[in-house]
Length: 187
Image 1 (cartoon, helix red, strand yellow):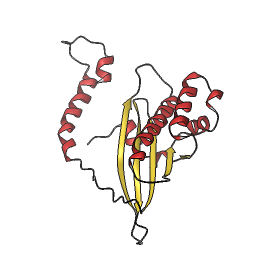
Image 2: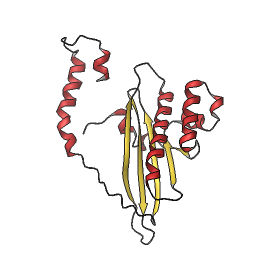
Image 3: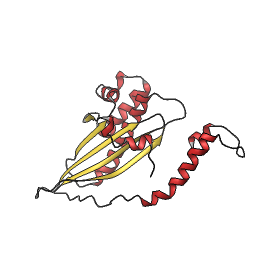
Image 4: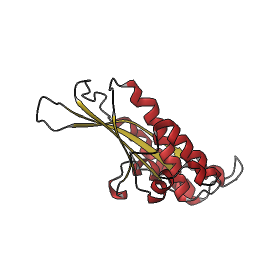
């Protein structure tokens, strides 16, 4: 939709061919969305071993965050259950923003998801792993917000306020599930 809006053509004018083809592909894939099934049961019980893993990513088009829960029954040697709790994507601003800054926006989005969802679980001391594939974001988060210029400083301060700027880890881009939300994927 943003790409269509950016063409700045009038309501009754035809779209450029490449934009029209992308729109038609979107409409063709739209009916497949109803086939996507995400299990609602996470196998969570307060006495199990519980970890939360949050991932964030960005591209020129969007930034995204995904929060997973990993539950392992302490009484058995069964494999842990891993489920997606929530994912969120935001379209990148029309005004050009550098990729590292968009990655930082993805990290803030993840901090907001963690701050919103993890308190809903009855876990006294939740184990939370936060993952990004951006070494630049990791370096920004390792220094006080006052070190940086306004854009970065505001977001680093907000992340620190919401969930703390510590506990962030590097994940390989190929292993980052938030990549799906930032780059897009067909149903």
